[in-house]
Image (tube, rainbow, N blue to C red; front, side, top):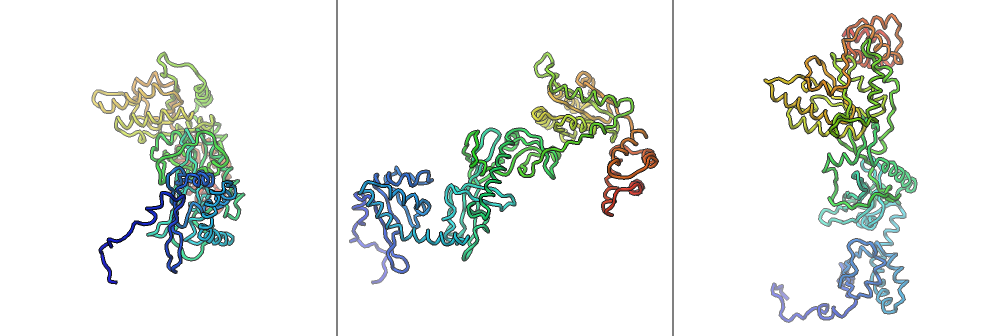
Length: 544
């Protein structure tokens, strides 16, 4: 008969619409490409059948057994993933009527699901998988392993989907993270592109941990790392290669980086404050904090975080101007006492800090003094240049507020370098700078920690600072004696020099920074020739 676009008027209602309401279960059949009948879907309508299946699908996302009708379509993914549970439920069912329906359902599914499971078992036995069966290994709640970023880690599978148009499989996962208050799940998605034939499971960017050739050992290492990660739940002063000294502080990181969470869902599920080994296994390999050297909030790999190796000689090696060497111990004593001192101003919060002003020309040891004190106290040193504060009133005030809150939290020593623009006496002709000085004075008044200020010219300091500075130390230009001490300390363990050669070096009118630069260049010269530093290298660099 010729084709027609008109719908015949003598069509009867489908049998399903007439009798479906009365049937506990409806099965829909179609012919496949070989003209064989195949069940393409079935619908459960019996409350008793759905109740009987409830234990088999407990916790399975996307299945609600209390719905009036529940439809499953080929390839019956939930039954593939819960086949053992379904078979066990069938065996345990005592009601003969319900058992007969479960037997019928088992018979219906056995061919399709059984074929899939048989193929999968054969593939997994050989450690491989085909693209069309990827979804059978990425089952919800399965622990997955990935080292795609170079860092081994575990995830929990949430679900997997095959995108028909592009052919790639999307694997949705979750892992454990911490925001400074609670542990919670965050999500991440992986895409596995279409491939032909078989592929080794462990060649995929993410695969079940059980398929790893050293699964149990990897699992225990990840749990151990998770315990270490868990220990960084508050502020910790540590060292990280390529970053130097860092502060691990997830709570402050969150405060300063509201958009750090990433993934395919923005909603997170909190799991509280108690961790289990399963949670530790799934813990992110990253801890968050602040790089003191780079002045930026960022994430650090747990495996890279190290304990700090303190420089025990830093304080003793500090060279102060002649006649002021005894002040070293006084400065250290004042700094240490500050953290235990309960004395404060009449107004609550005022006058609780200790402020030290170090003034003098560049390269005479002002910055090194603060570094040595912090090293002796074994606390962080937060170095802030005047340029970091900005030049506008709003920027200066905001930055000072941020830093002056962080430093006491971390029990750190604060060094603000070259603050002359904020210290100079106010004048009637420069109202903008006057406001900067006023803000600086007001913020220092409520500062609660140890603060070093360095200045190249302190003779024109504003009178408002007189009552706020506890110790003021003037550094003159280095003399020959001080320069000799500096040369000797730097060269003691790295080169063989005679006393006469030290005397010769001391006569060079260099400041401490210049001496350090000469030594660095000379060391590079010696290293290039694969030998120990000698006096001739220093002479060569000085003559450049």
